[in-house]
Length: 160
Image 1 (cartoon, rainbow, N blue to C red):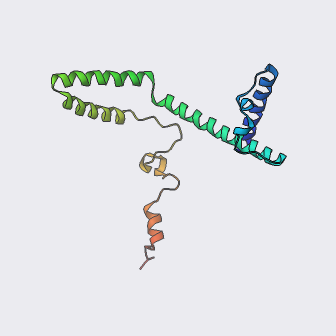
Image 2: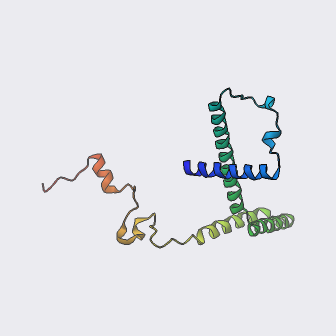
Image 3: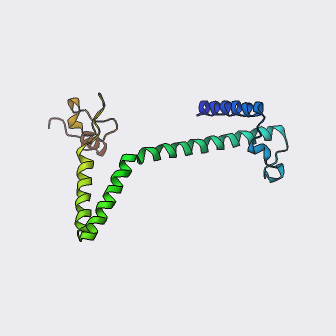
């Protein structure tokens, strides 16, 4: 985390240096000092305020970037076309008087399609179900019946 923050600060300083070389005035410099509610009285406070502002900027940039990336993954052009086609067909079937059956059958199709093609496991990746793993090995952290019996104190008596 600290390394990423240091890299962000270095990029920010380089960008500010490029702006100053080109003669551009940043938005922060155009704002009057009177509008800034925090007016530090010492150099140490100025440094701390600048660091916290850099941290806020980094967190905001990081959060917005993650949101945009996830949004691009969720809605693709093909998915959008499929949804639009489904809406057009739904409207057609509603006009014909078969809107509800079309809706229910399309739900069953979506369930079938969603369960039919699971993502293939990577080589060496273990299944959540131990019977599909080599030598029936459970995942780390899985609670087994033997572990539960041992923790509850139901240990079998030895040779009685």
